[in-house]
Image (cartoon, rainbow, N blue to C red; front, side, top):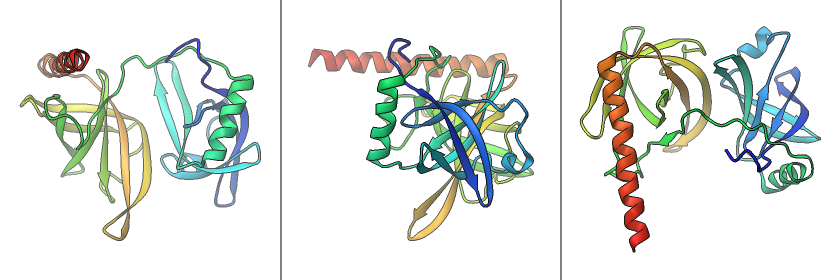
Length: 243
């Protein structure tokens, strides 16, 4: 993130779910609200809403957002990720940032590398993930990966019992043939989304996992995967520049 360009403005807001309302304060951007700290602790009702969609009341505007919890080195904070907000709402937030925006100056320790069906087949990525959970073997999609962890996604009620702080055990197979078995990842955040597929509504659940105690052999393979990805990307960018 560019530490010079302003990205957020600070604001008070309310979130609502059912008949419950919680007042918060955080940093607002076009994508959501971050760095929400709750000094007195999160009430039990709202702990159950983590990963679910809530209503956000911001400066008289109502929006839908996924309520998320993030774990970082020095503690934890909460986030709201807006869902399909309209252009007038985005414009309002842009104007607030333009007038009173701030730049916290942080940046991600490791950038996310996207994984998806439209990815260049020459780019090596984790292409298969099998999670072992309560006696089941569940195949999940990898959404992105970093040096420190991955984000996975599953359909329906698979992994519905998983909560922030849970440790999942899984295997990764990469598109370059590398196999990393018996990995562990702590759930650092999660989200639930409703999607329509073949005329039926279903849920997708996504989980951000931070690697826990990766052994030397798996770490070597995983770092080599990321290095190979970067080298292939560099070659492709150079080829574009020459055209």
